[in-house]
Length: 107
Image (cartoon, rainbow, N blue to C red; front, side, top):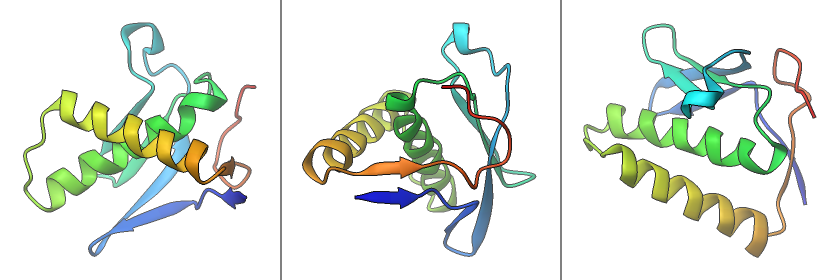
């Protein structure tokens, strides 16, 4: 099943735009960031296709943690993102279409 990644996601009443942003220090382990002030999720376009969903879910979980005051630690966010991505990709056969996201995806 192919699902188009939306240009923005909402958590509670907060809408976050999703964009590709190059040079997010991928060599230091940063494939994505969330900017709460501007409500933007930035994803490194050089991230592998297999890891894009993990990165997006990771940043969404950070938003959920902030909005709902969950105070999740980084390792918990990592585990949740990996588990959700694996379940969606493998169990549901999910494929993502990133064509609506601003910026250029490097494949």
